[in-house]
Image (cartoon, rainbow, N blue to C red):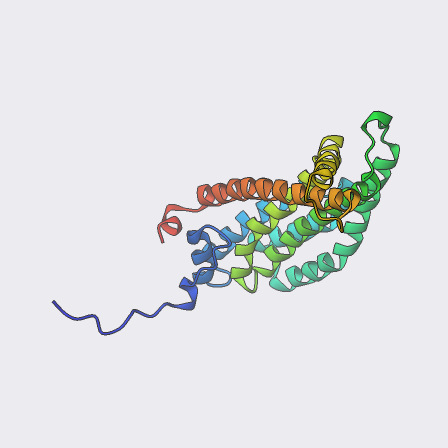
Length: 251
């Protein structure tokens, strides 16, 4: 039997980062710019970015994403050139900050109109409301930036491999920020736990209940974010695997 004298070379197109299903990432690495495979893979990424943006950005602020993905769609079907996509990408990137501000303003206004029973109030409500606004704004930002990555994929196909995970993170920020972070239950739980920890024998004296409640609140949110992000990433990965043709899926 012949001796193995060296390991086979790993081509750059075969190097995987794990940010997407292996076949999707590998296919993007091997795709020739402008080929049918390249366009098809970007079409999948575009669908994911559009879904995340529809879920995470208010309708009044979503127009830059819609316009950018429409420009990409025109390129995918041969109705526009790559220069028009580059222009749309630059415009979308410039619109990220205004989109984030518009989302924050909408959520802040919603919180101000919200009627809350006095019995559900907690000492960390002011801080928690600020967290709600921040997380919702980040959700919109990451959703729109997943569209930026999709457009980047026109010139650098492998950039599109980052879209599913980026979109899943956006969804998690939005879902947790406007869900658990906004509701009174998690806030009350953080305060109750903080009181218990500070009152138990041997508890450190340099960490008061107020500061600990805030810390616990963020720990709970981080755990919830991980659960939602993992679940949504799995859903996007399954969509990618379903949408890819058999020839590329087996590569």
